[in-house]
Length: 202
Picture 1 (cartoon, rainbow, N blue to C red):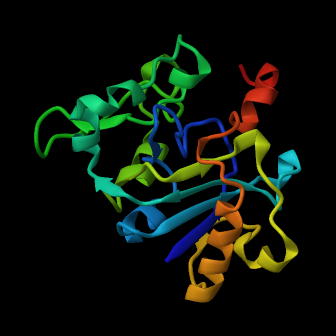
Picture 2 (cartoon, rainbow, N blue to C red; picture 1 turned 135 degrees about the horizontal axis):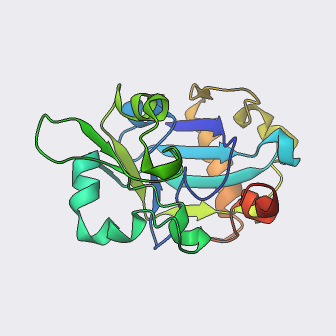
């Protein structure tokens, strides 16, 4: 199965394509809830940046973990945000955990919190209320600002609206994957689209 959605804000946060693993740990709770190992997730570009018909990233779901497991795994400590660091670490997505089992969620100072390390409850509820799943991929292509244009024959994979789509035939998915893999570009290829606009929001 392939899930497709529009990456409204491509900061390197959702998805986070750094340190050799593409992770989807925030936003799109419906995709994170439904996806299983072996599924694919496609993110297409935002129209506000002139990227509506472009493929920002494509990841195969290789592993699914919980927020607490993600937080405590030493491999992913580098994905915890450091807001006074480089863009690469500023947009870390490893932001949720419990101090004690059954306790309240802790939201780290991050892209999804408020100024002064105050939790943003709207983002916290959206990210955690319906699923405790983090999607991880080591087989991914993150194009970012180098996003290739999606051919017209695959226009159905760009839904052009909020939410997501996944009712694609096996043949359509196979054809799209063959096109995407034909670039032979794997891992992180480009920078997040929003980095070029940083002077407006930094």
